[in-house]
Amino acid sequence: MWPRFAGWSLSRQQGPDSPRTPDDFYCLALGHWSGQAQFQGKDPVKAAGYARTAAEQNHPAAQGLYGYFLSKGIGLKADPAAAITWWRKGAAQANADSLNALAAAYESGEGVAADKQEALRLYRQAAERGSKDAAQRLAALGAPKASSAGQAEFDEGARLYKVGQAEAAAKQFLRAAELGHARAQLQIGYQYNYGEGVAVNAGEAAKWYTRAAGQGDATAQSNLGNMYEHGTGCARTGSRPRAGTRRARPRTTRSASSASAAPISSGSGCPRTASSPSGGSRRPRSAGTPRPASRPT
Image 1 (cartoon, rainbow, N blue to C red):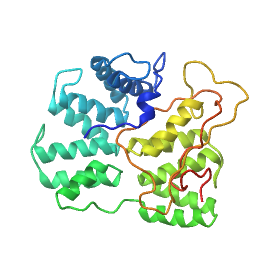
Image 2: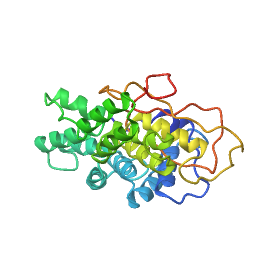
Image 3: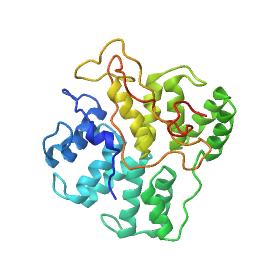
Image 4: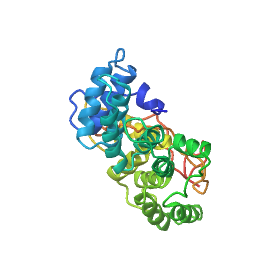
């Protein structure tokens, strides 16, 4: 169940030399847990330590991950009750993985008194925020998930976007994104990234990609990884990219009007950027572009 991170976050991850931000510590937790990239072998003790540091700095995905480590005794002594505490903190920030894990705990009675109705309520919230595991569990329990908050705004934004009204569409996508709609967060991040209906703003793009990625949206994770690798949105350590190279463009998926525009995978990405991008990469994906087209339709 927990967690399935996008491929870039494990295979391309570059841990910061001097971690400072919650994202830095979260990325290091993933790296030491996975044992991939420059991390030579798994180190669950370090992973748990970095996850706790990020969680204590209010990083929602790290709170969920640290809760998982506590629930399974990964890198530290198992403590189901403490896991519940951290999942509650992540759930309070609408982290899909934390909501799903908390729901499972209420269903099984592990670390908390069993409560089927509370489990269903939390599964619905997790499903609304993009958790496929929660949606599948709801279906197995015969309880269809509730309609997604912000869906009406997203649909209207998709309609406007398709007829070329990017500015009006951006307003609808932003409203849906603020309601927690993951594909809208992906889409408005894309539009900020490339100035479609809004002024170009790499910081806003990274912010919305991060929120969508935190809900398990694999497309946002990939786009965030693209920004991380090519240096847009925030500062990173390590070597500087080559000067004079072309800016990377995000990848895209199917039409924004589709209810399944972006594939979903649990976990979130690790934003980290440099002062200028390097060339040779693809445009990031939005919620509004069919593969392998380079611009939304």
